[in-house]
Image 1 (cartoon, helix red, strand yellow):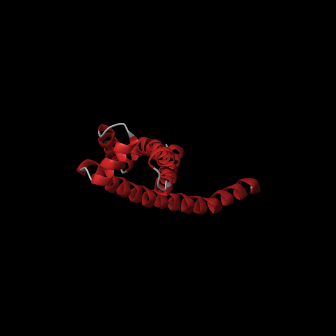
Image 2 (cartoon, one colour):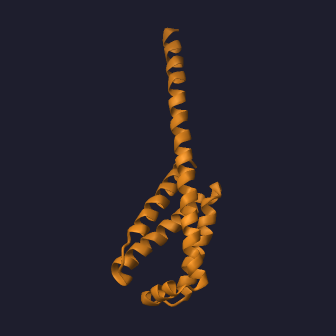
Image 3 (cartoon, helix red, strand yellow):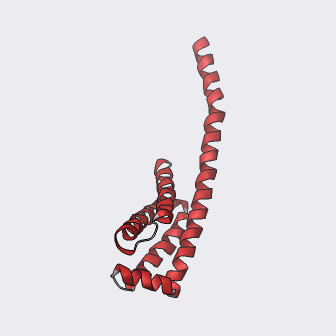
Length: 135
């Protein structure tokens, strides 16, 4: 009987700590998700608007301007998907793959710092990992 009481007390004692961690993780997940979605929405706008720097960048990549529109579409649709919990994992995976491509493109083709793409890869990987674990 003493064992059952001890086990019950231990489970009650650990529940608040687990709930606090879970709540903190949920808050962190939503902060990262909303910020990441906003960045990708803002990144897609110049691609659709035909901003000269985007046209030049995608010209240097050598795949044609259709690839600029495809990239903008992936960024925008995946950013929206990040905000829908049932689709967030898929949006995060698509954006992580896109950021791997962006990093490689910066390193091998167009030059410039891949740091923003690396930060976004970390953010989208965190979102995907967290959403995967909570499925």
